[in-house]
Length: 491
Image (cartoon, rainbow, N blue to C red; front, side):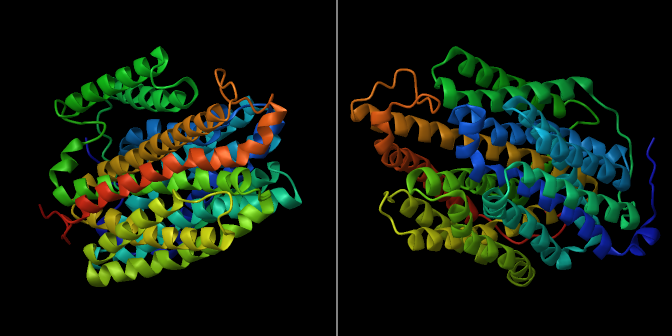
């Protein structure tokens, strides 16, 4: 039986600003947390006595949880009120931040990251769904621009802010500060947040839920372990195979039942389909670059944590300013005039990044980073907004679930591939220098003779990751030529 928690007349009386502020503040901390530890990874490897493929789980594991819970978010949006989901998501995020601040070892820190990710997995689709409900299509670009600010500025600011915190305090304070802001967002939301969604309570298909969890979980686990074990490893191949098979069954199942967990019929809207592809590629580039760049500045160019954070600050500020501005440009000019130039810039920047050496000027790195984040803001929000605009209102929960799930899956896969290419390239460089790399690169027991070669090996290893990113941007550019501005429900 369908039931609505609110009439259209009541919804029109809701003030959008307080609701949007509460959601944006909570999402900002969630996305900030996704990359905040990146700049501390080299130090964490030493303190926690783990290698690069293990420490990667603090980022990849975070996105793994987001990818697994993403398909469920569409169902939750139809079962629980806006306030209930908001309070639950902020509670998970706050609890995770508090546990992380007290974490004595890697295992506890990783568990805390899972709690944080669970909170963000609920909040991101809730925020997107709220914007779609509160704002008409002709004004949606400006609101989505604010969301774009969160999706770009928050993860981009993570390494910078975290670098400043670590220099003066310790990495634990990243989470103490995050938990404080999350409490503020939670209290603000409890006071101002109103129920604006519609509850229909569709039937829950447990088989779809099981297939989704196995599929996304196995696929992402396989990609992540590939960085540690190699792509020929039996475990890696088994996980990837199981993941693909489970997702194929999941897809088949969604078209066979009356109330799908994730309504894949949204892909019959062509602009939505194109937007999903573009948005996931951009998230792959953003999150993998936010993982690699702090490590490049520290391990490759010899900067300390504070210096690395400050070097990333200009680009972070540019992305924050550009997000809302791009939203207004989208409302005026549509997607193509922003997305195509943005992807061209991204491709050029990625290939330039692949040519850097240990002697590359830091000013040059700053300039590349600034242009890269500016170009990302030209693509991310317009692509997402144009795709969601084409969907009818009844498909909003499923569209947001698909968008949130695939962007995190892409981010996890992109980060895992980047780290794999980094580890492979670094080992290859050191092997050419005559070192035995049969057991991989163990930072807990580094050969003293190898130390002087580590910066050059890191820069050599990161080249492949940036070339891969450049190729992905070229593919996205080709897809962008088919984009056109659409109206709600238009096919």
